Length: 156
Ligand code: CMP
Image (cartoon, rainbow, N blue to C red; front, side):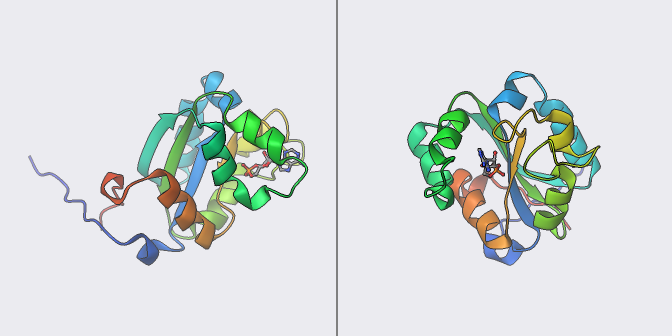
């Protein structure tokens, strides 16, 4: 049997081709993680790394630090640390933009039909999934959750 060799590569060389998603507490607790992941795979994204965990308040604060001055920051931190989540590092050409198209607008009420947030989100806070908003933040966010040795990029 032939096995595929996965090579370790520098994440900075992957800029433009990676993004990070978090399947948020409500979507996870409704057992929608599998259905959401299936949509993501069908859209051509490769799963580089994945794990379930419950964020501590400190971790959620740090992850969303960019929003620390926004009025919704405390609410967001409380929600994101309220239950388990599925965190997934994804690979695809033009990953950040294509993923944002797949998930739809931040507020599920504004998201187009057929997008993940439209179909699985219930409110601005419980909008089913997080998606990185830039290539720079995608790298930071992937480094926040995954060690280099735990990433398996798409071969070829
Ligand atoms: P996410 O992609 O995880 O990035 C930041 C999150 O903050 C966003 O999804 C929303 O869930 C949340 N958010 C953005 N704006 C608001 C808001 N006005 N009130 C509450 N939550 C918000």
